[in-house]
Length: 122
Ligand SMILES: [Zn+2]
Image (cartoon, rainbow, N blue to C red; front, side):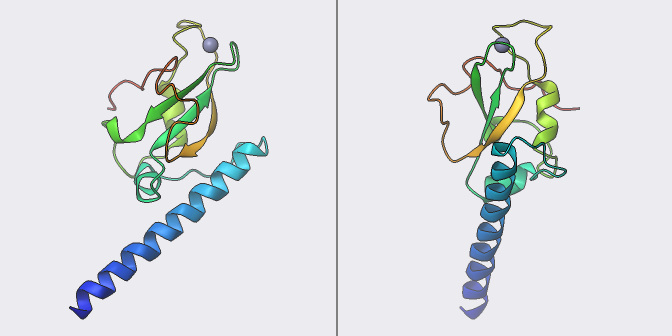
């Protein structure tokens, strides 16, 4: 019983730590800087923020990617996912999308609308 309570406390502490990291990352992105670090996919999921929002700098379309649906290693960096994303509206020569942040729900209401999920990982 005590071990279970201790485990629940550990889970809550880990979730809170993940939430703080994601909030800090989102704040740095919102300030216009590309952070020197990135949460892991697992960190984003533990924080309860599985939606990665990205902006196409060419056409200003915002898309959201559900990290829960990706076949990627959970310790992989969220920021690295941007390499596999492209804007379907702008085609194969679209510029690399800009990361907007991680959220509990898609902020645009159009999950995956214009920026499809990255191809399966290696
Ligand atoms: Zn575009």
